[in-house]
Image 1: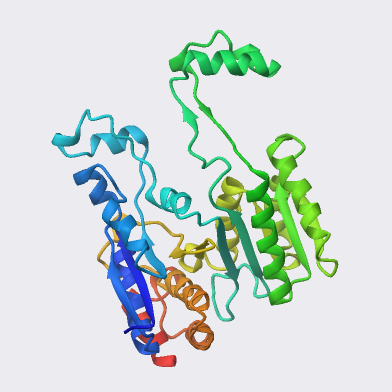
Image 2: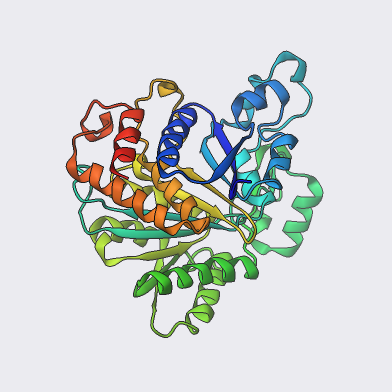
Length: 372
C-alpha cells in the first residue's frame, strides 16, 4: 500500500505542461504516492455545465491532498456563451472551481512564499524573503452578490444603513452589490497561522495589511483580531499598514518585510506584487490549507496561448510541489527539492524564455531532477 494518495488535477492550458514537470521531479524523489486523476476546468464547464464535477469532489475524500495545475476563468456572460448548445439557457452560472474548492473543503489559509533565489536575473533584489498569508474563503470572494438587486434587499439595506438612501431610486438592473464578509473566526485563524509561521521560521514581525480608515467594519475587525492574537506572541512585532501603502513600501523596501497577512482580495493582489519582486508569476507558488485537506498550485493561470508548447517556467509548480512535500511531512524530500531548484537557478544554464533562455518546461524539470 502506498504511503500517500494525491489528487492529480492538471486543469486547463499550461496546467498540463507544468504538472508533467512536477511528475518528473516527484519520480526522481521516489515519493511513495499514488496519483488519482481528477477532472476540473473549462472543458467540463463547457461540456457538462460544471467545472468541478461531483466525481472530483468525491476524490478528495480518498486522498491526502491535491496538486493542481491551472484553471481558466471567464466573465459570466462569456462563460455562458461557451456552453454547448444543449446547456444554453439552462440558468447555469459559472463560478470559479478553485474558489469553490477552497470554500467547500474549508481551505481557509492561502500561503504564498515569495523568495528571491540567488542567480535569478528577474529578482527585484536578492534579499527578499516574503510570505503572504491570505484568508481564503471569505471577504470579497464570499460569492454573496446581487444583480439585479431584489427590491426587498434594497429596502432592507436602505432601512438599516443611512448611506444606502442615495441609491434608493436606482433601478434593480442598474445596480450590483457584492458583500465583503469577514467573520471573527476566520480573521483569528488566518492571523494565528501567520504568527505561528513567523515563530516557526524565525521571522521577527508580522504585518497586517488592511484598509480600516475607509472599510471600517471588515478591515477594522481584521486589525482588532490581529492585536488580540499578537498579544500571545511577545517576541514577534505586529506592524499595521494600509493596503495601498503596503504596495508602495513593498516596491521601495521589500527587504524590510517578512510575513504579511490580509484578507482575500487584498491578499490576491498583494501576493502577485510580491511574486513580481522575485521573478514574476513563474515563481509564484501557493498552498491552500485547511484543517483536514490541502491543495497546492502555482498562481500563474492557464495561459491558453502557450498550452502544449512546454514553454513556460515550471518553477512555480516545483515550489508548490515542495510545499506539498512539507505538508505531507516529507521534510527531507522538500529540502532536497528546494536545494535542487536553487542550484539550477544559480547556475543559470537551463532557463525558460522568461529568464532569457530557450529551455523548455521539461528541460528545466529534468535539470532540477538531476540535481536531487
